[in-house]
Length: 286
Image (tube, rainbow, N blue to C red; front, side):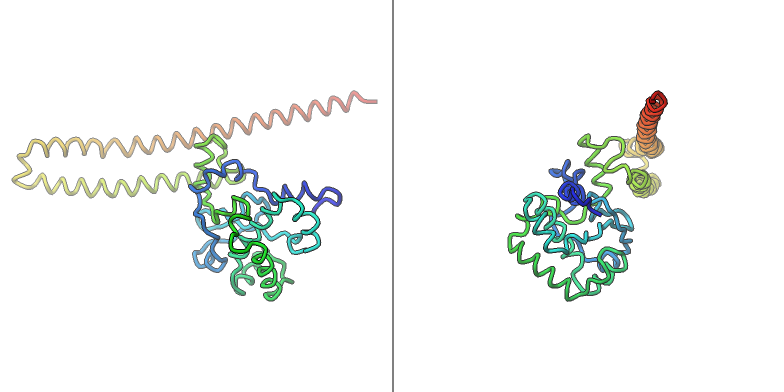
């Protein structure tokens, strides 16, 4: 619920994706300049639709799931929008961008049913009312929609693992990545992604070793000194490289874990000192 006497700060907090805004210039690494796919397409792709309140996570996806922020009810209230949203150009651009994303997410009546099931839209909102709202927003946006919506919504769906990489490479989140609440999932994705690539590389190495073994049995190649040296070098590489790469992946992940542990411990100690100081101040009162 929005505070009764402080609507504008609440609206900025609810609609402004501050985390994404800090890496706005790099979002092309995480998502294409396209509207999001409709909800029924995400279901077809076997993605779980997860409702979130943090607008930074709106339309952010990872393996098997996509995060969607439920449509705030105040964006369905014309009088409220006219009073608080339309008078603030920045706020209006984010509100229009958010509604623009929902125009793509809920493109059919079946999408509306999915939105009801996922608690993204109120069940009292029927298809006729939704179409009227879409027509109203479409009339405001016109043919130059991308010029009127906030830059974040130029990119539709954003990949969580790539947002994490962007944050780490730009120094925006070396420890936690994109957001602290997603860091646990990112560790599992980190291992799955890198060890998956290592496994694929090992398959290629195995094929190369098999081909070399066949070559060594050939009368022409068995006396070829250059081929013998190449086989020897590649065999040593095949034995050592996977172990080295696996250890690098492990120690990088351990480094991130230790950084998280240190930061969490530091925050805990700081909060405990503040609590103790507050208690001491309270005990010394009259």
